[in-house]
Length: 327
Image (cartoon, one colour):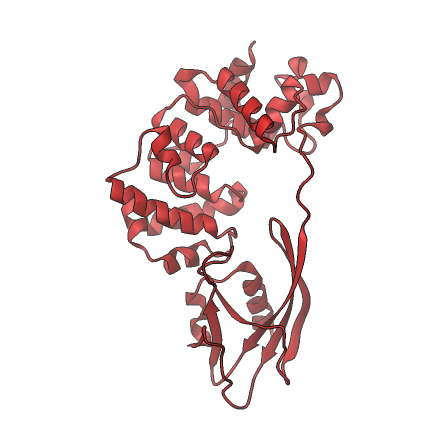
């Protein structure tokens, strides 16, 4: 039995039942792909369902404000995904509809090669292979490929291999089969090799290299940053500002961030760790209840404390508020 036949047969018996697989609506499929870029399915599915209820079409999403989209996205992290999603919805509306070609899909804001291939093959049946972490893992182990997957050479090699295995008339099934096989069978840790339909032809299994593949080049050094958040309370109000363009939390809101802690501020929680892609943040949380109204930096403004839920905030600020509500 060929690799492709075995994968498709396995998928027919073990494929996951997911709501975005019950439609060919490119908007629903695109939304699922964007949400799941950095998010596991159990965490991401409620967000997909809420977005589809609130904005069931591209037009509805395009007509939303950025603040509304960021607020609905809150808790998923990697907020550039939400901003790109919103921008791309407006792109699609300007085009007069969802693009049907791989090049057109790839031109959407925030859409890379993988996402374009997934949308194109699943929504429109385009014969193009997807290559994500699951696909890299399955192919590198089965064919014994040690080329680092996070290099230009690796991406080129694995993309060509995946494309050569793709049955043109079943691109959608094959791509989803590869995703599921990597997520459920050929997992990063403790893969189910004993029950694998490909074990007899798997190089990694035969040569005892399962734990060594796929190969990645050493990552960039992660930087550490330390910051203070000061939550100001004054006559039922608190002060926030909107993060400027150009950073990971662009468009989100946060309380006062300052190297200098005001006299009288009390420490709420110390050294809260928050991990980002290439940075680890350590934050100290303070609450400050001044007797007189303090002067705010130019880009800060007062809101009612009761209204803070109306603003999209980073997860780190959400942790601060959770500590605050415990009191």
